[in-house]
Image 1 (cartoon, rainbow, N blue to C red):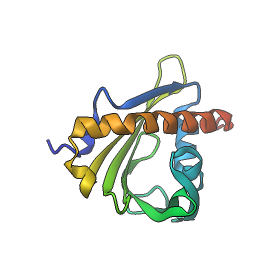
Image 2: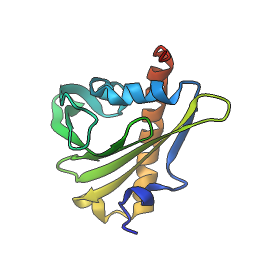
Image 3: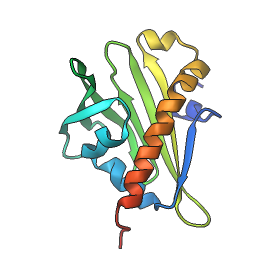
Image 4: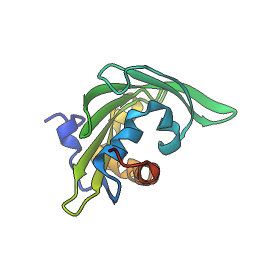
Length: 159
């Protein structure tokens, strides 16, 4: 199995966060591309969101960093199973690209589990061993999922 394939992301270094928000509430935040900079650590602003986000091939355009060191970047959807899984390809120039896998699972007593993992798929970061790359991304992804859950828990439940 290729180390950067979505299935290879299953690991003890995948961030897992449980929430009282429903899977639909979490998905609604993810599916609203304009919220990306609110929950993705390092993204400072959104520049554009394709109208069909998060359909496969759709793109969000965002800015990374803090002025005066900013980078206009984009993230493309590789695959999407609404309400269950989103696989993103983040460009991350000039440092390389990354594949981000987001998965949502219902919990037996209500709410859902959010899983997030990120692996390099090109550029200089591709030379980093997979386990080390997951370890480096773990704190950032832990904060991303905390922010995502906080946004989802404030959303009204779908009727």
